[in-house]
Figure (cartoon, rainbow, N blue to C red):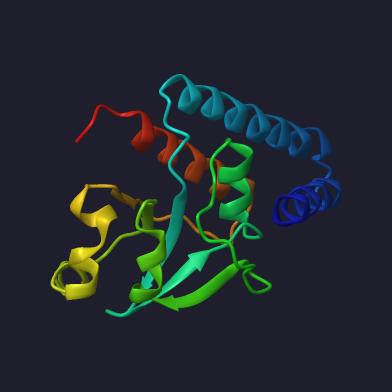
Length: 171
């Protein structure tokens, strides 16, 4: 639904600004990029581990992007699985605590950055965070700033960054 809405809004803007051809080109480029990234991920056998897409809110709370978010729909279209199964709110995310990630420790975690040095220090000193299997096994990836409530270009950037990190040589 989130992608469908983003595409419809882009087409509406294209009509308003007499740029319908360009709006459709952006949609086509988005679909092509996600398909290319999906193929790249599959060729690296990097699609088996479910993902968590999170944003830190303070030292104990997080925002988790569910399957009904633009970010969640994007990774699904890339052939990846969202480890967070509850539906999100109308924006597609759930609020949670770090401890609620305990049952999902076999996932890889992508967090939306940047984190300040202070926030990163607080996070890495959190005893619950430190014992999580995905932390101990180096399956936590920092994403650059991505506007998760943005449109297709933001989702495309997310797709490119997730693909880049999943397909780079092992840390």
